[in-house]
Image (cartoon, rainbow, N blue to C red; front, side, top):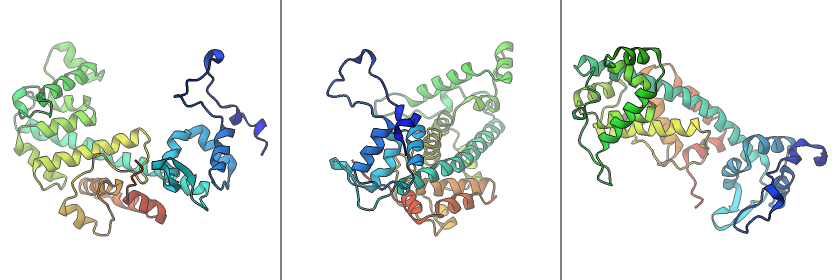
Length: 315
């Protein structure tokens, strides 16, 4: 391939004014230089054009999270590839992650929308259609800094409602009428709604809500499961790596989840443990075979399945 004629060889970040780059700052590299660097580190390239296009479109830094698993000792600065490593070894899981993220986002959307709707319905019918902004509607819990958590929650709820441009919210705002909970919850992002559930004081409503999606445990554990779904959704929304990822927020795996999917491998803090919870929730909501989409994808290749079930620690 004539690299000099490729537009990708021109990709670089210029240093304005031609001034020298401080020693502590890494200089930028062209696509040519990145490919050469990977070759020098022992990578076998099977499709240079594909690798170049991936580097151009997907960012070397993002891609590096995938080939860390194939380097000798990246935690201690040895970034050489192990003997026999090919570009397809990390490009394949990169592509698989793209597909898996789409399936996950479909599932987390189903969980989020269902929980919002059922919570609003149950709360309103329990007589709480208009007191969701009352501090007494939430437990008086404090964070590690001693701050009352419900105060921050109420501030965020008001912020999102004030920012909303939905027609119905504008109508309530214009007429000065209070916004009912079934309209208010539609203005909250998933993380704010999740925090709302975690602090909500009406335990009877929460118990009925969680039971409706198959969570038969205490409210704290249920809240942690939903919080983990928010984290999983956010990772996918930001196109983050899933393969060999160690999850910072991982859901408690209940007996019901293990019983529903007894053959599904899930090491602690792996993406698979979050997928187990997601499959369980979506199946309890819809029962439409969603779990088959997840398992069919991740089990299509052994290496990818292993990477979803087992986090790696590079630090």
